[in-house]
Image (tube, rainbow, N blue to C red; front, side, top):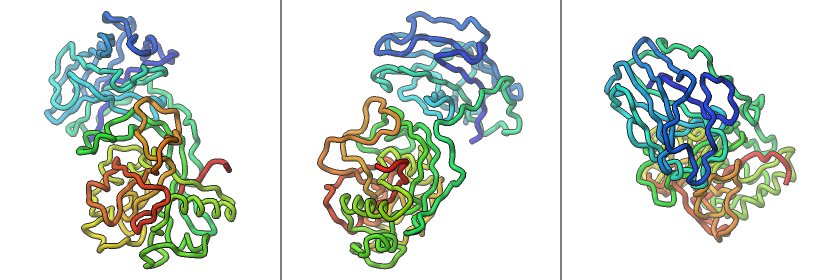
Length: 400
């Protein structure tokens, strides 16, 4: 579906362009904005594309805990058009659709004046918003070709990312041959959304999580790679060097990492749960499984595995070129199993400390298809060994 930018409205703590900026108080607890409409004194930004769609006169105000966006929409819209509102926490590097939007938002919005979108801010940010946000209002259309979209007169500057992309998008550990791919950092929302429906209650949508860039293992650690480091093979299904090592506990995985770090010039660790899900979803995209294709094409599961693991990377990769994050073997992550963040977590969260079980993700060759969903999570005691349980690695930034 082609995207037509019809308005960008910025809420910033410091003005960068008076034509596109308005200064308002921070959102803290129940004190959000003035309770009466506060019109923007500067001309509201307008963008017209092929003389078809025009948005203007955007005003924002508060009623109790609800933030109200009022705008005018003129010009014909096709039935399949969808109006969306998104915000960014990282200066436009990534965009997130708010929860709890009501009003003139979504598909089949009729043109007219005094359109309103209502956002229950505190349902998403329970402690209020204490940082700068950027908002953008867009129409998604299949009818207007992308070549007809004009460039805004004053495009937004591209902010410098917090973590610069490395020169190498993929690296290889020389002793084991473990390959890792660079995952560009960004912000995303863990948990269920309209595209990951029928989720269990612990996976309801959560506040956004922001991550710096990192290197993630392209595949699960294989039996051949394990044997080069540990000089043994603990796998229950000893079918070949290209099969994932399984039947390893969380403690076993940590022992492997310690031994590998002592031999290699690189330092590794288990991924955190946010890193795992962000990578699974091809950089935090709304993907039902770990790759936006049918699970039969990207995952080994109970209906196609033949009752045992299969060679790594023998199904389709996700959007980042990472294999088997849905299916083949469950994967240990660093975090202990606990309720996920209900308040906005710090950047690069390391996971909860309480708990007696570790989190496992991804499903396995013995799982049903619902267990392969990108937001599904399970738990296991850190000393458990199973023939459907393995792990993959992340490159650590510094030696611990």
